[in-house]
Image (tube, rainbow, N blue to C red; front, side, top):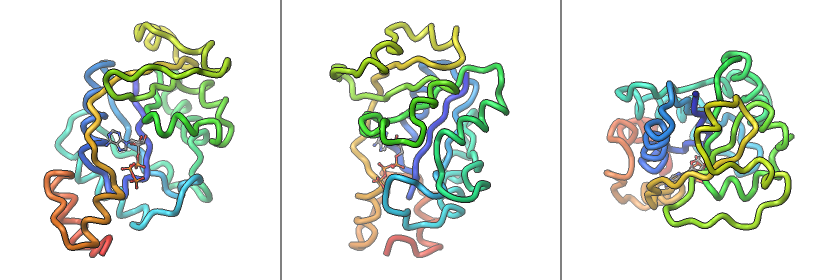
Length: 205
Ligand code: ATP
């Protein structure tokens, strides 16, 4: 099983990294592919360039076995749609279960994503929730795909929806960017190597 963790990563921080490590262990994933969105379709464009966001991500995960910095969204022109990314991953990994991870904030907007229903053709969707989270009412499309037993994710390559509680550190890239803009020290919210890169490129000032 392969985990897919998309985001703007502007910059990557310990909230992302902690969740990625927990799901790697919970689902016994062969690898977690962290995929920076080159041109996010649904939000303001990132502050750092896609190349620098990818560099920061690579620095953050370089000593973590099983974590892969995946640059496929930087190799495409135009907006970075997850559906195109999943199609391309499915070509690379025809026989593996693909687990697309997202926070509940992202899941709540999933029906605005380009060809969102087709995401389930290529991958399972695993929503990362806070411990104690209760599932809200789900539309039929989701309700019929919802599973309670994680084992089913391994037995099928795609198509199911699962909610997984993980530790969610209250860290956001927005807060980190604001802290830097105000001259505050963001240390211990993100890896030191990423902070060094931010300083080198004079980002977020
Ligand atoms: P921004 O503040 O710029 O919006 P962000 O910190 O929310 O950024 P993104 O790159 O937009 O980070 O998020 C990528 C993915 O990581 C999303 O699925 C999001 O739900 C999840 N995520 C963001 N922050 C955390 C966190 N603190 N803990 C766990 N997951 C997170």
